[in-house]
Image 1 (cartoon, rainbow, N blue to C red):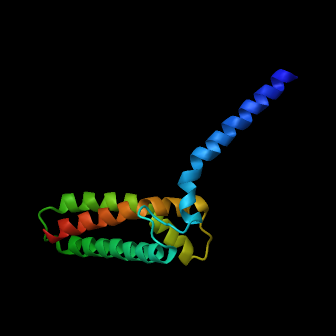
Image 2 (image 1 turned 45 degrees about the horizontal axis):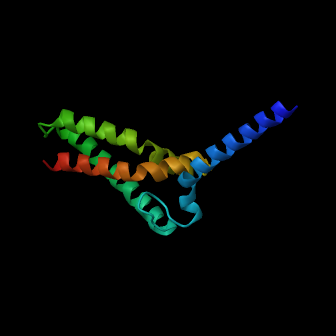
Image 3 (image 1 turned 90 degrees about the horizontal axis):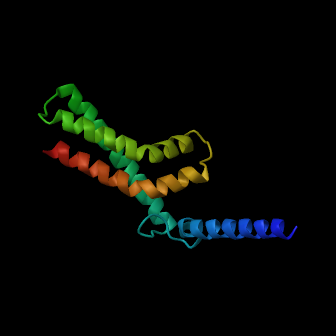
Length: 132
């Protein structure tokens, strides 16, 4: 019986340690800081909207460019666009669910918080290629 209680104690300690290790990754929204640089909620929502609009603008530019075929670096542009879409996928899924009136799971919101800055960078990299 004592051995079973020791095993349960170790299990409780291990679970508490896992919870404490996960806590820092979950605390940002609890204290009013969102995203990697600690925006307020309103600032972060505005930033997410700007990034979403900008990456959509880049997609539109690529589509228009495909019709004209003017660029010599088209292969590089298409690879950059594909990369942007992969990185921006959580943001696009989030917005699509929101537009359809569906709830967004907490895990998806966390993915958006973690990936929006990378999405922004990928969209700007594509923009640089389009400007060349």
